[in-house]
Length: 219
Image (cartoon, rainbow, N blue to C red):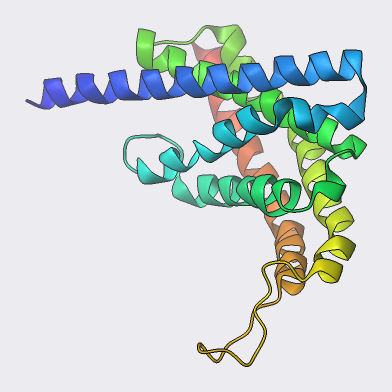
């Protein structure tokens, strides 16, 4: 029975990883095509639907606690911040969509996830990963994490005036819940979380890189 469940788990994870890999590959191809043909202002419109689908599908990693190897403490902040930018900024405030930071965001995210999901997909499907893919998995973040984080923070900052002017998602008193919510200040709080959160995640990934590459050298 345990062997059967282990096989089902591996099949599920292999399908999941390769499906999300396909989604992010589509995002990257659409982004490059838009950049080549129309420039940075056209990137968001070209990738909107596959980007939303691929990024939102990452919620399954949180639901599948115990199945995926990534710890929740590392996965939750990353998925949460990306969902906030995808839906809370880009989807909610169209004024941000033509900025050049959207291009750097999309390329950073898609390259990172294409490598990550192919790494785990191959590991689940075949039981191993080639050394070059392992190196990419634990090395490309050195550049792509800073560019991705800078793009995320920049887009949130750019959206702040539009958030404040529109009062979208705000709840004002009086109301039947006797409570209020200000999306502008919530967005400022999210920006504040990046200050300690980004260095912490980068340090964590450096530690993971050291472990992974030391095993590679020892093999």
